[in-house]
Length: 250
View 1 (cartoon, rainbow, N blue to C red):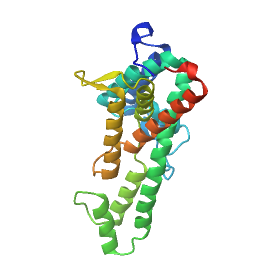
View 2: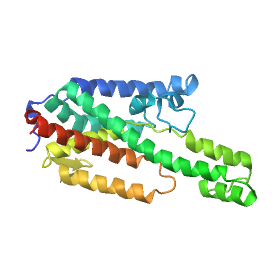
View 3: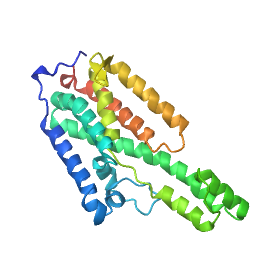
View 4: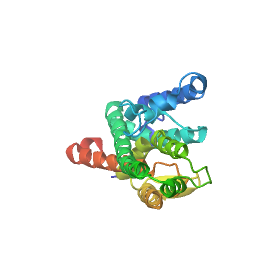
């Protein structure tokens, strides 16, 4: 292993360029036809298996959806920054396999956690039998005062089940983890100012994501488990490929 030196590498390799374009087109569609004609979040963002909105293709399409301009800019910058190095080392075909596997692994981890969280909510909803249990359910799942009404409880349940997950973060975290594995001593400039070696940057970021997962703070809509899942799949893949085909690695 060594430091990554981009001098002989393409600054914008072809697959990274195409991924940036596809993500940009999806975001444009979300904010044009998605605002008036098609509910793109319902069709293409990822939904839990327990939701009537779940469709199998969402495991792929959610990776090209983003919730805000900040969301897509951060993910695309990180994809270019770390993914370009990986594509230059592996080539576009292997990098595409890696990218999709990380995104799918992140989605699967997130879906498993959602399933158990939602199963608990569904069980509590089905156990409602009187006003005290109805009030306890509503108070547990909303931080603000709302009417104690069966219709409100039903809305809370379906709001939770139909909540969309979207973004390339899981796949991008896989790229970040793989970059740190291959080029651990390369410096990453945090906020473009603070130089930190890639291995320490990733470990610190993973620790933050794990802490956030355990905290599970109210109002935190970031899929921390998906981030960790993507990073884990990325490490497993790069470790396996490194053992079986060393000519692709530094």
